[in-house]
Length: 268
Image (cartoon, rainbow, N blue to C red; front, side, top):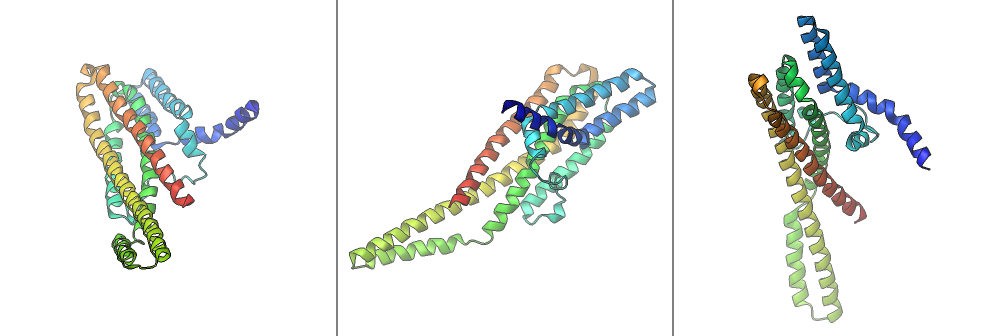
């Protein structure tokens, strides 16, 4: 059984490699190194760029999250951050627009960054790619929750609860009173579920805002590292890597929570 599982994973490896190799950020690193190498006529710079590119791909290949997203059955288009104009929720749309703009600015900032800066940013760029993948999933979930919430009316459910309370107090027949009480409990559960969905939607929006703010802050951080260049310490790069790694970990926990909410909704 174990050999069969390993064989299956090996069969999917070309697909995983192809997706990682075609990553925009990975290609930016490789292309930038190639341009610098050509300008300086330096094979050493070209070799460093190749090593950085291979390291980024290797990082994806050993990432369970990257495998899961690649083998999810979604098309390449579905795995990309959608265009803002295709989104219905205005707050989701604003966050996605901010991420797109920040990513473009980051690409320009990386385009002519010194090779020393690029080599130190390998892990951060890989984490950034993972973070963008999480943003894509949150956008899908935010749109799904937003569409559902537009079909429900919390005020109507609360009014139904109020009416059931009155009917329970007014009922003279004991069996009728019990039925009203049972209906009231069902409505309470209904309201609680709707409030949970509202809270989940708000948390999705908050996490998308956080991702957008992180993307928007990265170009300035990269420029700071470029300005310092040789004076930049490993700890400064390490802080950036840890920040992105911590965010990915926290967002993974949040995604697991959302999945639990989805399972509860399906079961109900």
